[in-house]
Amino acid sequence: MGEQETIRVARRSVEVFNAGDWGAVEALLTADSVYEEVGTGRTLRGARENVEVLRGWKAAFPDARGTITNALATGDTAVLEVTWQGTHSGDLATPMGTVPATGRTVTVKAAMVIEVENGKVKAERHYLDAAGMLAQLGLGASATA
Image 1 (spheres, rainbow, N blue to C red):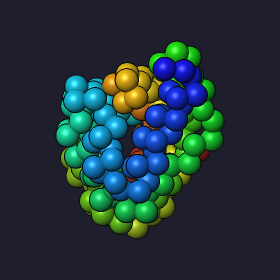
Image 2: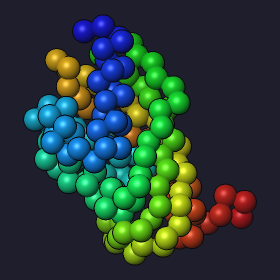
Image 3: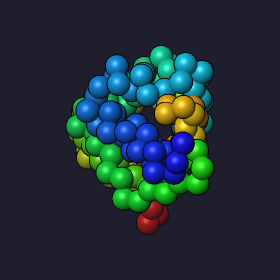
């Protein structure tokens, strides 16, 4: 598979999340896919587990949307720079407990490293600014503190 196809598959992973199309998310993942959410310390194995966590993000931020600002690939690995935006209007389940809705809007920068195999996402490492997100929600130290 060429690098442009790798980028296309990686971009598609953000597009189907934005649309909340969980069937398309699951279809885009290999059955044994691994998703590592570096900012939260969470690692997910398998398409179904991944979909459930993504549903949780969308439930907490129903208007969540990722905007891809840069994309590059080498071989079967793509790197996306993404800006995530959304309003925290639902409970957010985290590895450390549930965060009740704050009503605040957040903008979070992230990088996603996505490995593609046979046109599907095999592995993803999502480096998101969790501390910055928590600060915007009023739950962490301010970046200027």
